[in-house]
Length: 321
Length: 262
Ligand SMILES: Cc1cc2nc3c(=O)[nH]c(=O)nc-3n(C[C@H](O)[C@H](O)[C@H](O)COP(=O)(O)OP(=O)(O)OC[C@H]3O[C@@H](n4cnc5c(N)ncnc54)[C@H](O)[C@@H]3O)c2cc1C
Image 1: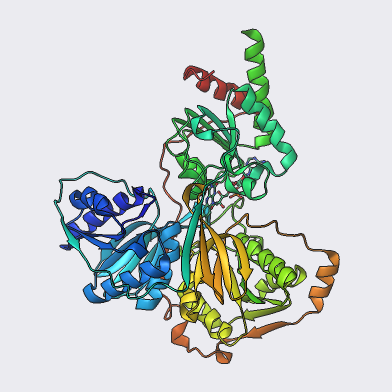
Image 2: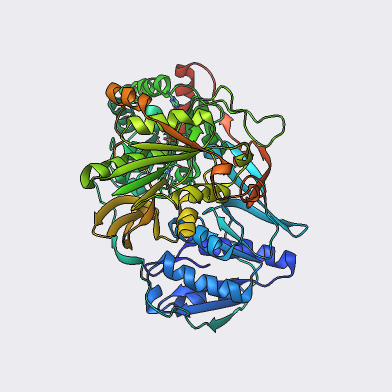
């Protein structure tokens, strides 16, 4: 299930096709990219190298994502063609679509998967629990068809030999307009005074900051380092910092030269927004915090001890030079 | 406006020293502190805010053992009028699909205009129960909801998409929304609220009371079966910096300086 929004194919599309290709080759199956939307021929030609076939359903009513409309098309196609596996992104799009589609069709579904495999005709997946502290290997109930939603960035979008897939136009099975759910408009995220995506140095705080008043401490450190203060989602939910400082899937994607995380556990939705940082330090008092696994340097300690020490050190250097 | 809120009693694990149990199928739960799932906390608050604005009742409902009564008591203290707990030995090892069926078997017989759930549960994080329940009930749904406006028989909600972008969607009522964190500011429980909540009754139902049989629930009624859990492998070779805060700070500054960042 290809995903696109406002004129762009989303990365998850290529990631799923890459994994889908690997599974198809291993199981002697063929790989189809399914594109729903309006005026999407451009996307179709971009996907021909990554799939055996690219199916296009063009309908004005599919222009913007609408789980109800998409579900109708998908359920009729899945019922007719019985794919072994349907991959959907574990995204705002897929979370709205996949569970209800599975229920309508009576097809087993599992979500937010990091890996998928077939073992003796049974589908097994790997997914995370407890905010990424634990991985789970799970089996799906044996069935003829499965639906799996895929965690963004779990798979690399590899460039293989071009598959030269054929573009197939599929008639839209939408007979009447969708009645229950109607897309109205997009609302842009607010723009603030600081652009964290342009920052070379980011100090990010999470729930470990405990109190709004403690933010000044870390802001001073950020200032001393010539960096910018960013944060995890709970800090924005509490309105301690504005939304444009939030790093992660529902916030900003940043690529600074230096990212220092303080009191952030490292949930995938956060890490996805900073993974491409050049140099990552993680300060967390919990040695088992998942964030350490993507850090270059880890400090298992109380941030309220490390922050003042760091600040003093920088002031020291600055007064000497 | 009758609102049903589905809540889950979950262990707080962000700061806990998690241990995998000997069967490697779950973590050791003893010693962990349990509370209402973070997303459900926002869902409950939203339900109470909507009730305060439009009138009506709020019913909190959970599938869980006796321990989860503390979460229901919290809901009652925070403005829920009724509470229902669904419990049975045979519900154990139910996945999101089976849980949604259990909830459905009760909710379908209740009067409601709106059902709220959290986007996902803190512990297992499938993000499935809400939309599956809506599918079983045959009512419209929207996930990841950050704003709700209700009018006669219809609703307008903002769904939060990637990058902070939102989409506004119109849905007919009754509907189910899965609530995203930050939609409101959950209130603190007042002493009065706690006292009142202690006197309220929690209705307890088990499999025999529901129009379900044992194959609908537990492992038999589930799609997903956990085979094994383990600590995730590290993605990077992390170097740990040890010592006193001063020593740690000195080392960090050295590294940053060597990269020309100071
Ligand atoms: C659809 C969706 C989208 C989301 N989008 C985002 C997003 O864009 N960005 C985002 O960040 N999250 C996002 N989340 C939320 C995400 O799943 C996590 O809940 C969130 O990232 C947790 O934030 P945290 O690490 O600050 O808090 P917690 O997980 O509570 O972690 C706090 C950490 O602080 C540590 N700590 C506490 N005190 C100290 C101390 N004194 N010193 C050192 N360490 C300390 C603890 O050990 C713990 O590891 C999203 C979730 C969903 C469902």
